[in-house]
Length: 563
Image (cartoon, rainbow, N blue to C red; front, side):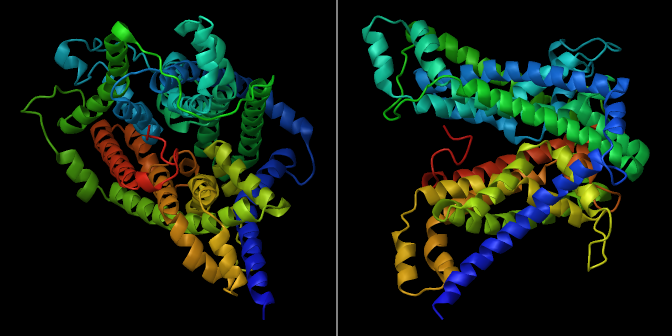
């Protein structure tokens, strides 16, 4: 009998390994095999012919160009924001950080729609001040420059979070020694603080690059109208034009996108790891007194938020409240009919919302449960199998979502073995993609919770003969419940508005909320798309507020918008 608890523990680990490998590793392996051997045998000649086609070559160069350029912009903005909030005496930092990180929580397709409507010739906000573009003028964002700008602004919070964490780990005695040697603020910043935080800067750059190259929402909303092809929009258009018949070509393009993504991460990691920059962490970060420059810096910081957050969102709200697109925002044209249509009368939107709600709630519940047990093994029973499971989960999250979408189509296109059922074209393939894509997202805060838990209580229960599942339920779960709840909310927030994975998996009978913005905008329903976008932003704010209520019981950094 004493062997049963031990056996149940490893049965759970085996089930976790099967779950992750089946939903993460197997689809990606199928994608690679389909790209390299579409007819069952390796065919590098066909692959090279495809990748050297002019259209593919142009899209590849465009993807690299906008990703690298937007990453550079994100690094500049994010690093500057981190320095300001960590090392200066700027006031109202918490509120500013919330506003700066908020765009990261908003779906990229909503962000793109808001910016498009803010700077269009029919902009209801700029039109009030006579600053709108003249009718017939080319929209400035429908260009490579517009894509770079929006991707850079959208990914700057990713860089900010990693650089801020790196700066907070620096010991203050280094800055104090530099000051004692006569170093000024500029010297302190550029010769001590930022060089020592270099690993954080390059880690943020890697995150920004991966996010940029796989950001379907911004690239599609701006690139397709501008006829500026990228790899991610080429994959999308390939499926729309040729359907499943083009899967081998899509797999090859997805594999190329994967290689570029992994290479970008590797180069960034190599640059960040050059040289020995290890220091002993601890203590409060050094604060640079701004003196008379403080009001000027604070004004510039808040003006930045007004220009990059308030202006586009206010344009989105204004567009959703006018009777027709392009009309001025006046009391005569004010209406809430688009919200009523979105919530009650538009069947496809209502069904998409209900489908998304069910899928995200189910995915969050499953992933929190899986992550709870997986975090236990990762924290207290480290081994090769556990590390491989974590690597598979991280890989599915790190790669652009559209790659996972292609992999899911290839893996589930044929009927499932034994069952003889096909889930292609149903909501279940979207659920499988969510489980694969967001496992790492649910796992991270729970791992942070385990790091703060003393294992002695669980060991005492084991010595007393308590079964594994009983120990997990009665001892471990109450201690990490807040982080598990936070992980569930973060998954729910991301999955409800997700577009990167589901854009290839939705069908006429299984649509989710995220792609609806693209479909409505493509169909010419800009005011209705704006209303749906505003509802999505409202949902994000409500979920952020719910998670913030637990902030006092969560590990520091579990919620990215908390300063």
